[in-house]
Amino acid sequence: MALNQSGWRPTTPESGSNAPATFTGNKALMLEEALIFEIGSTDTTGVDFSASPAKTGAQSGDVATGPRPSPGNKLGDLFRAKPIGLPGLSEPETVRHYTRLSRQNYAIDLGLFPLGSCTMKHNPRLNEKMARLPGFADVHPLQPVDTVQGALGVIHQLAEWLVTLTGMHSVAMSPKAGAHGELCGILAIKAALEKRGEGHRKVVLVPESAHGTNPATAAFAGFAVEDIPATPDGRVDTEALVARLGPDVAGVMITNPNTCGLFERDLKAISEAVHAAGGYVYCDGANFNAIVGRVRPGDLGIDAMHINLHKTFSTPHGGGGPGSGPVVFSERLTPFAPLPFVERSDSGFHLVEEETAGEHHADSFGRMTAFHGQMGMFTRALTYILSHGADGLRQVAEDAVLNANYVLRSLEDVLDAPFAKSGPCMHEAIFSDEGFPEGFTTIDVAKALIDEGFHPMTMYFPLVVHGAMLVEPTETESRAALDQFIGALRSVAERAKAGDATLKTAPHFAPRSRLDETLAARKPKLVWREPVVASEAAE
Ligand SMILES: *Cc1c(COP(=O)(O)O)cnc(C)c1O
Image (cartoon, rainbow, N blue to C red):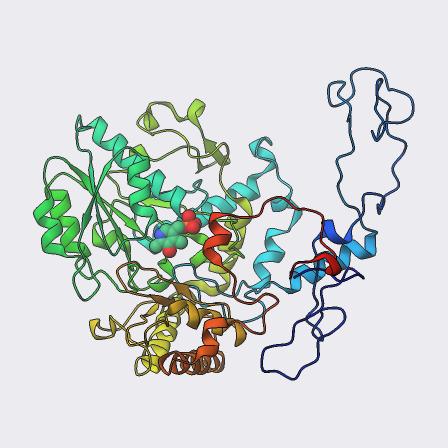
């Protein structure tokens, strides 16, 4: 839509609506906002700069003015030759611009965020308060260890909790996300195989019910990935997996709870078979929130598993960060775990690094990160753990599972639920677009949910389900909030099943309606051009 002469985008009223267009494009408190390039000007700034240094030979239009400073400025005697054309706004305009944009975001603090496989739950403010204490927030990774004893104590105490909760032998705290944790686990397995002289084991078996990062990790670490089919009830086909074991198999990567939202019941038997065949068991435990306090992965024979602190133990995430994916190890893999780690002795906490590790850790595969991991997330996770206590953590899992089953059972009459007969789900409920009339699919439901004021659920994942809708309500939603979401999804599903054409153009009430997402992904417009005034616009 083009700007009009006044630089505003007029609204187009909804088709069939008798609402008038507004001059500003705003719809009451829903404020339209142009790009900063459109509203800013290169002549405006909120800051008083002193005169810029001159550059000899400056051409007209160059910003450089005033005397040239002595050589050796901070940019190595480089000077700007041309204006860079960045738009400026006054301070209040800048504040408004970004505040208006931020209001177009959806956030967990606004409402239920049902993305599955991503656990968007409430983040207690206490965590934030603790993480912002200067003693944690302002430490530098190169500070002498005797000045950061408290921070190292947090890492150590959190590590102890993770080892206890998982029933495993040790933990590497440094990996910075779930996928990074997978890489850490797989590199430890690789190191263990090489130490045994079995580096020729090059195949990693990955069931269809595993998360997409699993095969990516195995491939990245140089293994050949082989798929193991899923059974119709959404679990790994144990028979097929066991049949494929052999001297070329390095191990398996199994997501539990899996991407069909189900518990892999055969994991213990699978571990025994994999171990008997000389392989290792990697478990993707990103969604530990579904089993924390109820199941100890160590009891299932797992050799390595990452835990997404940001999913289970809370931290505001999404949009790319932050994450933290500590990896717990079995006794057999512990010698190969990465450095550094925090150790406690009579004299306090210290870091075991390459220089200090000595022969004891000679088999460590190396490092995952430059320093020690995500300090802010460690502080949040430990705060979350300590404020919930062991009983509270168990209730986290119970409520997450209860809420997901409530959603599943409340909607299975109106939406196809492919695994509804496979028993209770874990933390996620899965539906499909089976039974929708021709031309209607999951995306229409998702877009209409935006009109209902909800972030859409995960769509078209897991791949084994046609038109999948993956809903993870999490444990922090009340029954009232769930009922409202269920009501909205029910209404939208009924409209889809009735072939309601207005769904095809939803969302109708969002700042932007249905976009051509394929075009946007394939041919993104990355360069801003001068806006076209309404009188010249072709529209
Ligand atoms: C989220 C998730 C991952 C990836 O975690 P990141 O922190 O995003 O790298 C891996 N596996 C499963 C099952 C997940 O849910």
